Image (cartoon, rainbow, N blue to C red; front, side, top):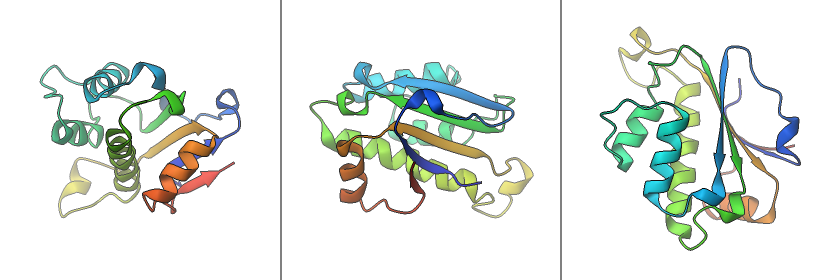
Length: 148
């Protein structure tokens, strides 16, 4: 299992994993952090108590125990249109997704975690374009990035 970013030529060629939930996030509809939180909250059916902030997002995206699936596939469409005027927030969101992918792969991340969480597939698919590749390089995210 290799979690992380998968940069692909075409998003419609993705092979899903068994027992997976596949969510599609429309990048063009995400122009600020509220849009980001709402898109992921809707896609993953976050509980009503979701606080719509960075800490709450990170906690829930690394939990997902209310879902029956054990593989999580995110298809991020129109990456170049996401956060069109806010590169800092865009990169922060990429970092949160990247860290989540790594954490899901390396469970347990702390003592006792194995009692309530198992490793899971967590892959983020993005259509290949120069912007995503340069952003990941700028952020020094080079491991667990698969360009197909």
